[in-house]
Image (cartoon, rainbow, N blue to C red; front, side, top):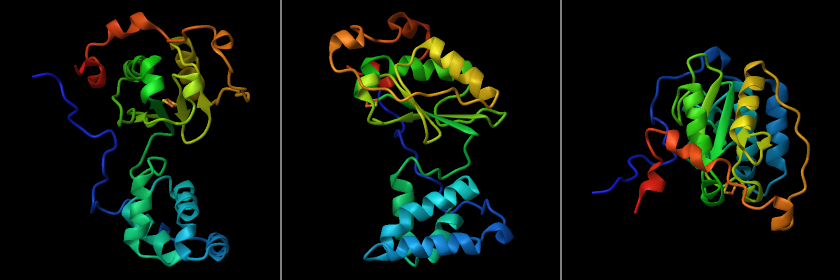
Length: 224
Ligand code: FES
């Protein structure tokens, strides 16, 4: 029997973990409450404000354990289940503590064909952790991501829900990790997506031979 996918790409969070945020810190400031009220007032029903509310909470607390989701639901005025559903649907909402830098490496169709798994496994080897894990120093979390909408410059990754790094190759990854370790986000410039194959410089697969260096081949590439 061939290999099969043992785990879903997106893990569900633990349902009833011990609270991660101390009770006396689990509060919004008056300004934050005012901000949430403003968002709620802009929608026909309070549900409309949940995404912004969760985002505000994630920026404040770093991630969204159940008690924070509950806090947001209370503040917005909607049931916990509705807020939980939104928080768990989007991978951009962190349900557990992550590293300082979260690297979302896209391995969806275009990126996979252009070496997305090469890049994922190269980063795993460099940092000594697997996807879904955080380095011991708390600096990096690696995640496997679905299409991030930049297929024209595959393979790519996203840094902590922020900048995209396009047309990845090993050198670019090396430079990126070195910079992030020193807390420097490399300078990014806006790019115009190429319009035809000539502009793209032909086949841009990152490094075909590198795939041989991994001891465990990506499951999705070994299915037959
Ligand atoms: S497949 Fe990677 S960005 Fe679309």
